[in-house]
Length: 208
Image (cartoon, rainbow, N blue to C red; front, side, top):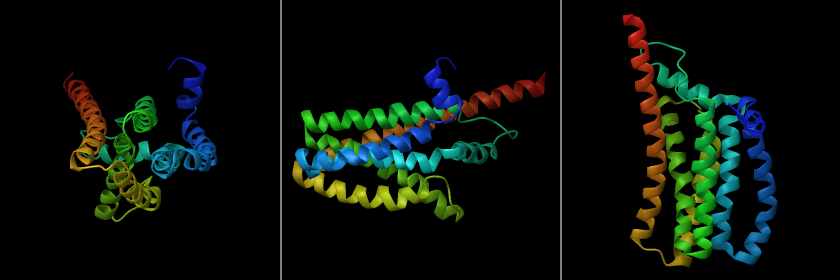
């Protein structure tokens, strides 16, 4: 891992705390956005700070990565596999969340408000990924509380308000949902490739 900023963010695992700080700052700016950009666009903007709050609950202390690695490791040849690496976790949460939310906000502002649904469907779909395992296992997982109390209520309200303001039809919703599914599908594909690589490595080690 090269570069001091990246070492501080990932090597020292400070990025969840940086996300919490940034969420607070963006939250303080939210009233200005709502006042001058309007409620629909303000709700699109709000998706980023609430996602950052979720990331703090999820990743502070590196607990989500430990939870995922433990869960996935149970179905592999051995234990202790680093299926989800620190650097992959950081880039997934930065490029695929912060970056996508920013792009969706710009699209909603300068192209079409309906494209802001992309930023709204992303956390709602993520919430499902936390709530369903919690129901099945009847156990808390990192990120569950913000999924229930932030993602779902704000997501449903935002979907209604933005859809009504933009005159969205089914195609607009399917496009936004499709992007959210594609993002999560990319993450799943990465994890599956990583598992396959680790499995092949372990098989070769056992055979040698």
